[in-house]
Image 1 (cartoon, chains in turn blue, purple):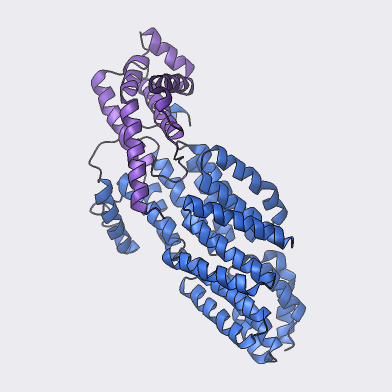
Image 2 (cartoon, helix red, strand yellow):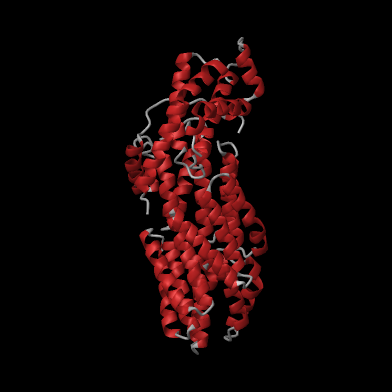
Length: 370
Length: 126
């Protein structure tokens, strides 16, 4: 940032951190519709309060991502237009960047990838003007990398993740560095080198535990559960699942709790417990629906369809696929799997489900569950 | 596991300690390197500390004292520089101020940081 970009401070009363924390809760409890009208009374321009709101929204993103997205979008819009004097020095640019980043991160969790990319681009235009721009641009790069993983661009993730991990380490941001190593391990999982992946996640979990990065520790535990399950190490998988559940429940991380439940479904299925696995998948689907993760709801429909075909229930399977297809269309999911979607749709018309197309689509969706 | 409150206290202690060690140097940077009048410098210093306290709570900000301190020094120099950028048509008479403006805030920040490290000596833990 060049010096000429720093506006001189505005004047006026600012809430203390303690006041702002309480006030932020009250702002978030006020409906979005009422907020603009009551903006002065609610001190919506207060920089201290905005900081607390950002912190709350990052947390909310893992509890109710759709709600966090709506909130971030509101605050971005409020700060952006009409032009307002917010805080001191670089604060306005920082908050605009941060709200855009939160909106993008939540869009990513909700599988709204085009929207996520647009928000990341917007965040960048603000972060480059803010102080500590290199760190914020790196945080953006992490989100883009996570998006690449969801788009199954594994080679690119494997190429870039270690570089960004190194970059974060040099910026003295160890948690972000470890998050990049997590993405690298998740991409490596797709190469089938599961023993290597297991070691990576174990190292990440250990490091996260030492440094008290609880969220990352819970996610590493959840990933280890999946790896043990793939390797048929059932008792280790169950131990990890329990550990992950304790951490994720404590953090009220509903996004990852739902993914954990999905993993339980896969484990039960791999053991041949079809009825119990259906129950577990339905539980996960319910959890995804509650937090508006519609893409994951659709993906679970397809998995259920596959199981129901195994269980010789083609009519039920057809119903599951018919429930998934409109969501896939609406969210423009799996553009790379458009041929499989089309084959599946044709097979539905013939009342004879194309199993290969269904499984191929499940493959495209796998990253949503990881 | 450390609670959020414990982490908050430790951050707050670090911030207070950085401010108390850097305060004198920040004042002299504003008044001597950048020729900001004493009263105005006092007001800017207050704003800098408020900003710095909030900055320390943003994501993406390093925890180590050394790197955190750099942010305060860097913003101090940018603020000093902007003080003159806002005075269209005026140019400082003081040679030291002219030098600071010619070199730019990034270079001055490096010099100030070196001074601060030298003053604090081995007390500055990474």
